[in-house]
Length: 415
Ligand SMILES: Cc1ncc(C[n+]2csc(CCOP(=O)(O)OP(=O)(O)O)c2C)c(N)n1
Ligand SMILES: [Mg+2]
Image 1 (cartoon, rainbow, N blue to C red):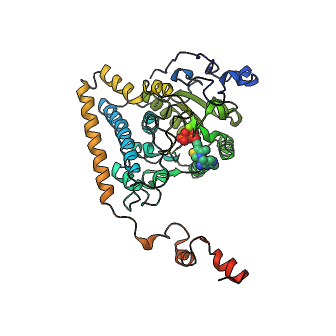
Image 2 (spheres, protein in one colour):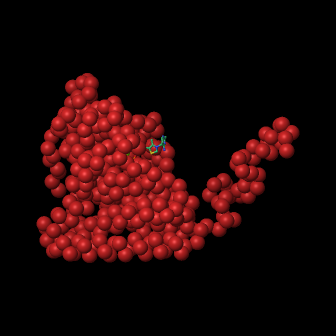
Image 3 (cartoon, protein in one colour):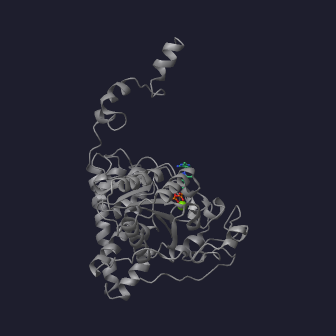
């Protein structure tokens, strides 16, 4: 599959340094030209052509070659995700979904392309922006929506919610809310595969914001040192909450950050489904067959705010958002299907949308009618099950660990 060649550079010079390998002079130069000034992207916006592919492809040839039917299904899954997220926002605003809720509209190609090469026995671990990943892993929309509604039929039994989707039966070990907190867990899973000589790999999804956390550095150091079968799939959507990667990272080119860990890295266009699928397949095969870790940085964009509570317009311009919508992964792939004659008319694409919309409505109906978990199962999975009842019996509001009994009553003699 052809790798994208994008227009190099940009008006303010960001993106100039993305060559095939990190140039030493890039490291020495103060990255003024790449850094965003507070209050805006160097007084402008961050357009798709600020980024170009980088890092030389390595590993065994990708063997992924989906049939026309499969390509149509991948398109359908992207449409399903987009419509699912739009409905999720509506349901959240009706207060049917509690807790935090992070949408992935705009990032569909990374999830669908990145996960397509995952085998049944491979493992996926991710950050909290994970609805798209769960759906791409094949968890049903009913199961995901029920989880968002906190219902027992949800993929995590109604206990996880939006940020903690999980389905161990499909090798999805979650959705994790602490930025980079899951990276050591994913690396540990890869360590298990290596120690027990299993020919599988781990795909660890994370945001670009996670690479400034200590846990990321510690985990990648071990993956590089022990040569673990893990691919770190970075969804670089340019922002961590309201801070752009250019404002947060001394070296904003995330793929270069692995230089310290003797690990291969590449950066690709995350809005190009086939490019993501090809690179993910190649690096996962390399992880399984050669036991080598890698990082795959996918440049993408989230259309909505950081979470449903964020309008997403205080730290970026409308112009920027519109520009990225002009590079939409679903429209791009739909056009490819049309150009190749896999889809014969625009009406066929509209029909996919209608069908996926009906799928989402079914999911909402299912979630609405599903039961919440039994009250007396509240303590399950929190403490060792045999001590849960005792632990919970000691709790009172404001002293969840029995502080009232231990401190106030015993120590202070207070009632
Ligand atoms: C250790 C830690 N620090 C801060 C936060 C608060 N926080 C939640 S999401 C987020 C931004 C993360 O951005 P990124 O990794 O790029 O992921 P994205 O939200 O863009 O998908 C921050 C700082 C957190 N959850 N965990
Ligand atoms: Mg981000």
